[in-house]
Image 1 (cartoon, one colour):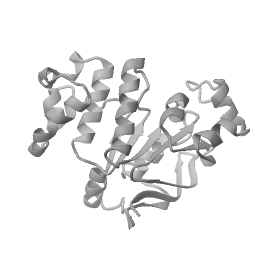
Image 2: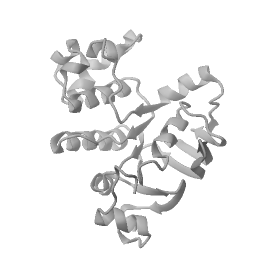
Image 3: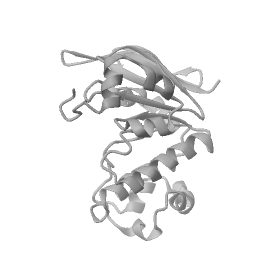
Image 4: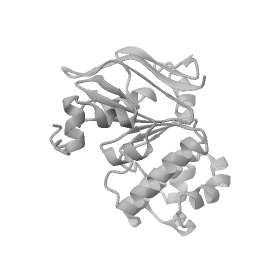
Length: 242
């Protein structure tokens, strides 16, 4: 079965255990939301999967093959299979939108128009610089850049943070379409509980570096785990990490 698997992943940053023996998986065509307080390692998890951060222990497997983060050339292929959409747009300010999208791979140019239409992006912005676009447009360009690599798995880091409701709905529609129409596995790190309820096949809740809860949205709604209850009541101050 084609799936992205994380097995017993552990990572210490400074003196803090960020991830501890974490195991999870996402199949092609599935949407998995990962929820948790700020600073609990959700973004570290995504960066570890693609080798931007090296785990202290544990393994990452893609479609039955173990990845090797110590081999940088091997991780290039992993990053093509697992497209990471960062929380910030991460665009090069000195390049036009088109230059950001292609970035050394002219083959991508053949797919730009169709993908822009899918994301409801006007082609006139191809000649714009990132600073000339709104934050919402920059995030959509960042997503477009990732999709042009035709990944099998998409990793989203807070995809709807800072977006207006209309753009949030568009991004959510794209995530659903990627999974259900294009058979991509989508691993979504988010604080957006309503999007999780709306989209997720499964929800994983991280607390103190460990998986505290894993199940369907219905399971999450019914859980009496204190952090799940706090999420539902909206009593978590994410800016402070509580």
